[in-house]
Structure formats: structure tokens, C-alpha cells
Amino acid sequence: MKNKRYLAGPYLFWSISFVVIPLLVVFYYAMTNDEGSITFANLAQITTQENLKALGMSLLLSFVSTAICLLLAYPLAMILSSKNVNQSSFIVLIFILPMWMNFLLRTMAWQTLLEKNGVINSILSFVHLPALEIINTPGAIILGMVYNFLPFMVLPIYNVLIKIDRDVINAARDLGASSSYTFLKIILPLSIPGIISGITMVFVPALTTFVISDLLGGGKILLIGNVIEQSFKQNSNWHVGSGLSMVLMVFIIASMALVAKYDKEGEGSSF
Image (cartoon, rainbow, N blue to C red; front, side):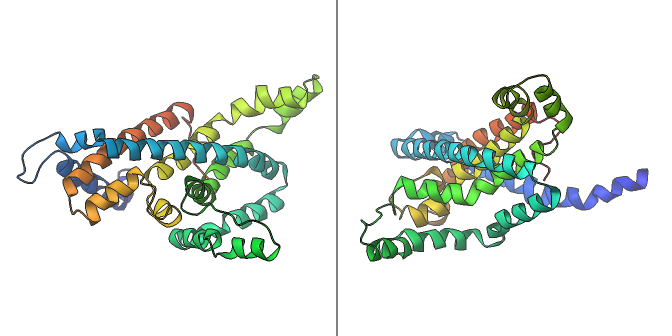
């Protein structure tokens, strides 16, 4: 039994090297200035008008994209869970197949599709329909978020739905419960862990993204992820960038606490 403890050694080494130490470095830069003195000025940068606007826009687009993902993912997950094992496995494979492609390439593909002289507008022009003016708008960013993060909403919900005992559903229907009543009183409550896990897995990356807003927003729509990226890459100000990153950690920790409360057995995260 004691020897088995050493099997966790590689995991502990990996976690300390690539999780704990980087977080400590970010925390150090967030709480210090160029002279190495402790300061809260970096955290206070979030209160500037530009950064508050970027944070507000990030929260808004993240909420909208997460809501759209949920509305699309739940019916799809229910359809998949009603299929037999072979059918559902094949459909899930087809659905997650685009995830095997690089995230940046997937986003650039949408940029090619949506741009003014892109594929979609070329087809619309060919059939004499008005052009689609969506590139470099919040709508394009939401579309990119939904496309990239939708599988992360489908899989946790699907994972929970397939674990629901069909005898419970059949018993409710045998007792005279309608399909809507069965859904509201049995299926939906039992799928809450998957919903919460899916919301977290979509909302957090949507809140922190900067690639999608860069490519599909054309740099015209500044999200908090873009502000942090510019602080590190363009301004070379690691202190402000780290301070803003620590502020975003509040949302990530809140999401983790939400998952821990409603998905205590990890049903929605093991797929």
C-alpha cells in the first residue's frame, strides 16, 4: 500500500511544476511593482474605465454564448442519450471531431467564412441575396465562442443523462406522468450536475478568450482577455497583466465552487 503512494509522484511533480509554480509567479507579479515592493495597484487596474468596459463586455458575451450553448446542447444531449450505444458513440465521435483540429485554425476558418468577401457572402451574392455584415461585431465573437465551446456543454450533459436509470423514467410514465412533467420533475433535476459542469466549462474559457475576439472581432472589440494579452506582449507589463489575471481568478474559483456544490460526485466532468 505504501509503494502505491509513489505512483502519485509524477502527477505531483507535474502539478507543482506547471500549476503551482506558475500561479505563484503570477501572484508575485500581481502583488509587486517594478521595485519589488508590495502593492495593490495592479489589482486596482481593473477599476479603470477601459478595463471595466472590457470586463463588462467579456461577461456579457460569455453569458450570452453560454446560454446559447445550453439551449443547443441540452436537446442534442437528450437525443444522443436516447440512441443505442453504437449510434450515440458514432454521433458523439462525429460531433467532437472538429475539436481534433487546432483551436486557432477553427477560428480562422470562421473568419474566412464570415469576412466581407468570404465564402458565405460569395454564396449570398451568387443567389442575389444581401451580404451578411457580421464580421468584426459582437455577434461574430459569440458565434465563434458557441462553435468552439459547444462540445464542452454537450458532453457533460450527455454523460449525466446516460446514467439516469430508465426504470425511474418508465415508472413515472406508468404512474400517469406526462412527458413534460417527467422531464421537469425527474430528468431535469437529475441532470443539474451536468448542466452546472457544462456552464462552467463554457463560461470560463469564453470569459478569458482573446483569440476569438482578435480574429472575429478584428481588434475592434476589446475583451478582458485582450487587455491581459496586451499587458504581457505589447506593453511588457507583467505586473498589471498578472494583477488583472488574479481578478479573473475570482470568477474561476467561483465557478469551481459552484461545480463542487452541485456535482459532488463528478458525474458531469467524467466523459
